[in-house]
Length: 604
Image (tube, rainbow, N blue to C red; front, top):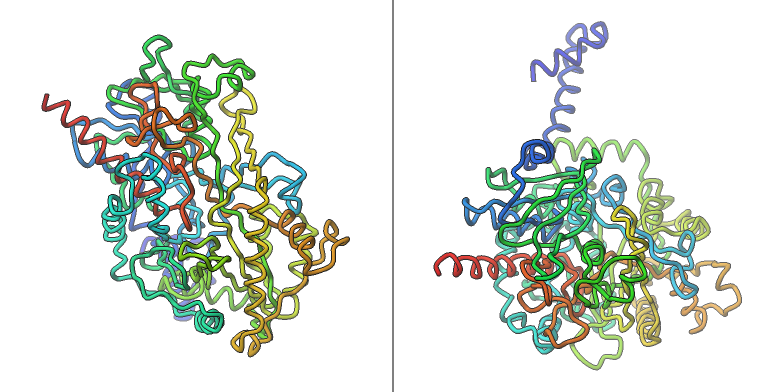
């Protein structure tokens, strides 16, 4: 501290002269030290890319591609379990920035984001720039756990029963429930403290009047009802899931800013031999895997790497000039949760000035508490079945609150979704004179399925994302029913007290339709419906004789030896809620499969 204060006062000695100057210097020094301390409790594993490129080693027992939620977990578990196993973890990004640490800054992480865009069509994302939905994906250590909303939701037990019923034995809820429990212990959820937001009570009362009650369950399942979900936040800071698993170890080698161009596969034996890497300095390096290669690059990049490696639909690979080694439906079965924003006016007038925001920042820096240590009411959610025909939800409501004439959150939030200026201006106009409550119905089980395809054979080109949103008309109808349910909240006493009413959004593309008609809402959904960043399923898990599957229940690629996929792309169907927690379960279960396989081999 003394050295830091000396450096600060040396820049302008006269300003820090005397007792008052010394007090001010001490205050400034404390503030700088508090800012630095945000990072001090965790050190990312060192980048060994140049060491490996220049001096080797050129082979590792396990090569894990992608240091995201699943990849970081798996690499950390493998390196910890057996110090004799050498593990290479390859990440295209670098360490996360300061923005990723502060929970409230989840909207300000464009510097560590792949920023994928979907292929435009005439049926969806019509309110987005160039009719392309923006698909954010973390490009840093920790992957999307560096930029997501930190919401921890297991999903519904039926989600996993559906997986097992499709032939994926060992993936039923009773089989994997223990993994959720282990993860929750690692995250120390037993000591988790909720942010006591006053709007929780308002929302609870409104939903209760509509017959939807607060869940008494503590197991983080997405069952019918309302709940405040747990966040991956610890001591006021984002708990990037990689921080739980990744420690500096001699047998763990991390290459950052390094892109995996393809998996090297023997064209005769179909044995995966290694990977071809390209570092940001331009050097291309082949690395050999002694045991196996594990792709954990996510539901967009994992199928892209497989396709570039010659594993995928034969016709598509032939079109791109890539020899097809194994004909599998890679990239197909793409599913995603679509969110539709509904903006409600209130009679509340909360003003946050730049001075107030500065005080919030100082409070956070010194105490890691207050406005910046949480995400407002985003962790409040409700699950409903719009047909009231079962206890299996088809809609999840997310919520957000914007203070009047919000100058800090609203535009970054809407820009982050990729909306056109017309849409942003229209929502900002609603927010100009009062606080705005956002209710966002999210389609949990879309029947429409999309596809990931190669744009070309260049590994550095972004792939084509074909969403096929609303291809099945049932998806539109489910969202319209959800909008009607949201509007019924206006009739509750809880909403009437705060004069909470839906503010009609003026969209030029929907001007021909009568407001509140089914035609209007279909047009609205096609314009404003966007991803909530939960793509899954593009490397589907299933039986080998299932022509729609790519990996088996052990996550090994059909027809290829020594190649496994461990990330959300293996999900056969999407889970009921935010997908981070199930993705961690996939990594934990894969770890158990791997150690059983290789320790048995070693014993033999």
